[in-house]
Image 1 (tube, protein in one colour):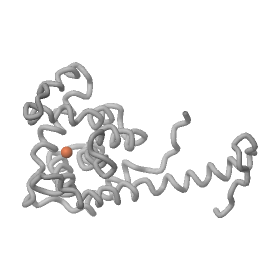
Image 2 (spheres, helix red, strand yellow):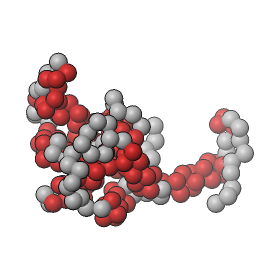
Image 3 (spheres, protein in one colour):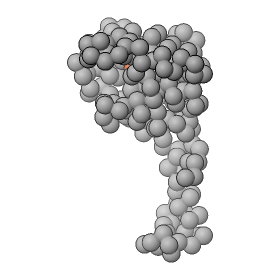
Length: 186
Ligand SMILES: [Fe+2]
């Protein structure tokens, strides 16, 4: 649809113009999966001092989740848990969680949001920080999933020689999870 609204201030918008805008947004939703796939690919340029680049890390985490028999959503969150690093690293968990929030369960949202604190068990002692931060959430419904994602799929996924499943093999799952759906109002 090539139609556009003509108002220059929202105060002047008409029903017809908002219908045009609404239809354009529905079209845009269809490209979410492609955008996220491109962001995932961009992680290849970031090694960040690890033994492998961040795309290999993502694919290895996704592959481990798939081979463990995880659900499609859990495979996708394992694959995309660090996608926020394509924007910035310090709050990458929050970025990734908010990016995926409209498409994933509330439990998965909390897992992605807080995964770095769970990883702290392995290295926060080197930063002079507590390593048991995860325990503050031990009674939450998503605690077991967070432990599984971090301990079994994320933390062991820095092997540059591990034969990962291809990014292409995950694309159908990404299209299934990041489907075209309307944004929440608010
Ligand atoms: Fe990670």
